[in-house]
Image (tube, helix red, strand yellow):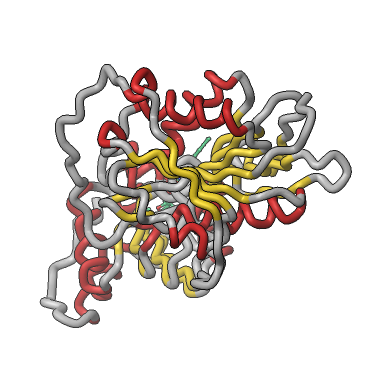
Length: 340
Ligand SMILES: Cc1cc2nc3c(=O)[nH]c(=O)nc-3n(C[C@H](O)[C@H](O)[C@H](O)COP(=O)(O)OP(=O)(O)OC[C@H]3O[C@@H](n4cnc5c(N)ncnc54)[C@H](O)[C@@H]3O)c2cc1C
């Protein structure tokens, strides 16, 4: 058991040379935890050319920012990132260390917790402090999303977890907040890597990543084939939105995994979610039921998706979606998709 309580840490993420907004969401979670523990909230930034980019972290709630700014950290390389983080944790001994359940967080944290010989709860949807034990309560869906489990890490430190992106809004930034910035050098042994960075190829998709989209046109197995699925891309393009998918549609390779909405995909909070040929399994609902307005198109009037829909259209998506496309600006009288 630890002798004294350390700080709450969050892992900041740098994308395209700037601090990404998931870092601020994490600070909103971390602020609540640190305040309940009476400890400081720290954010950790690894990268190259990032030392002067710490202000936004302090404005969004960090008391301390640890920066390791080295050319070797310009791109993510698992061994170097892990070694630098292990050294930092061993030196400063945080009580809690949280990261976002993004590709970065999901890659960094599982390696880190093994080396630190502690535990990790992945993909939490809620975090709190147990008022009696002061342990971190890590809440996440379990048993296919049918129950919510509260998980604790009583015996080892830090208590580590990843949190679903978009599970909390960032705190309003306060440009007058002041904090401490601690710039560390990475040890040569830590920065050495067996990996060589070759290139970063962006996935081609309509619109923003679904986590950032205000309108999502999502499709499921009821779209029948990839050609019909392309109708959804057209509708999304006309609406200025992005394309989402059920796991069935992703498994059928009609959409990339990055478009998957749900328990084993992404949680989304758009203003409008249009579900086309999606039954509404609990695992899918887990990722989209926080949408402001849900519009469902389904041939089956008893489909569970209608229970969460604000507007339900009982009918063939291959007839309805082309009509919606025609109603959008720039509609061009497309023919309907193939129903079979
Ligand atoms: C551990 C675990 C994790 C999972 N994670 C996820 C996840 O992250 N995301 C996810 O989506 N699922 C997930 N699933 C799978 C989930 O249980 C469902 O199997 C899946 O969501 C169903 O996808 P679907 O709605 O596209 O297909 P189906 O359930 O087959 O539904 C197809 C729907 O299309 C309708 N339809 C048919 N023809 C038409 C038409 N012409 N026009 C309109 N509607 C039509 C049908 O009435 C039906 O409702 C997970 C499952 C498990 C066990």
